[in-house]
Length: 70
Image 1 (cartoon, helix red, strand yellow):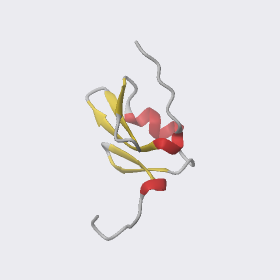
Image 2 (tube, one colour):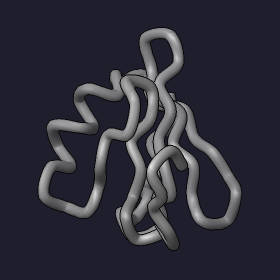
Image 3 (tube, one colour):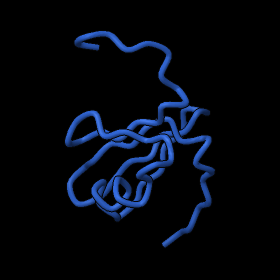
Image 4 (cartoon, helix red, strand yellow):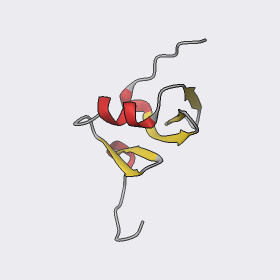
């Protein structure tokens, strides 16, 4: 049980795993959360995050280019 504060601006993306979520930051570190990705999706609506797949939530801050299938 450890609590770590992560700034929204530092989050690059989140990935669902089992019943929890991995959170990846801009320093290439990752953190584990016991919360489901769905919870983060609901909390971060309208804050620059987008669910691109059922297992991934990304920050538009770090998107450089969008193409038809990438």
